[in-house]
Length: 151
Image (cartoon, rainbow, N blue to C red; front, side, top):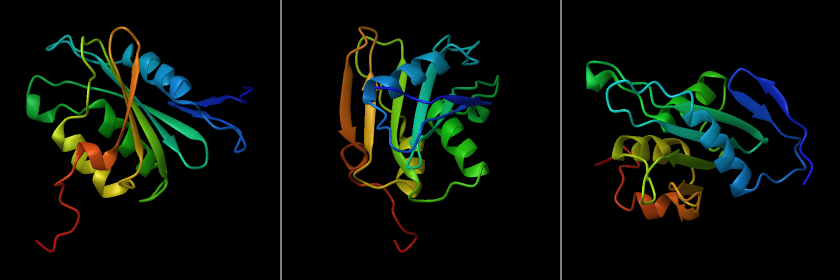
């Protein structure tokens, strides 16, 4: 597969006729993980968010001494994409990488943010230290998520 890469800040752009494989997306998440700011937990996490137009946004966890101010990798990627003008429905897939023995899923706050902006059928790729990849759908991760304010 040939890709046309153009790096701008924390995004990668692929030509629109190229399908980005789960392996490429996961590699971008692993590369992002190296930029995490995790001085308290020593648990770096990286995420790579694929947009429907082929752009990839990376995100990392950014910790704070006040743990409530910490931001996860998945939300860092999502919020950057939204800040750049992407909207609900523009998201195609996400990959999440950490150094764990088992597959690393998003936390529940990140799941809820993903539910707000992404299709229930969106692929969520998880990995673990041996670099194997597991594919789930967002709806599998969040079967009882809030989807409206009509509760």
